[in-house]
Image (cartoon, rainbow, N blue to C red):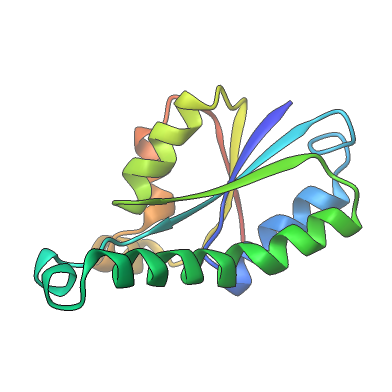
Length: 140
């Protein structure tokens, strides 16, 4: 099975990761895990002020900050994975990556906001569930 795991470094990411590691039928030694970090792009005016190189360096450092500990954790558990990061709208990029990667499932953590919270704030997880043709498993 091929699973897409969107990560942001939050405690909710850790819960989704722990869920996968404890459910070998989803993520065992023969399965593939694609770990994805989506970052919000810097406004163009920032890029023009500090330079594209500084902005690219910032995004690379942020990706390392989020993905580094996850990669170490997955290595300790001997799981086959690939990790990457993208710039864009989180929900849109997650849905697109799920399709592009040929994922069988997207597993992601969620804050677990109630109905009122989702109605007022929106939710990346809610948008992924709504827009994705790939099945989505939310871990709370």
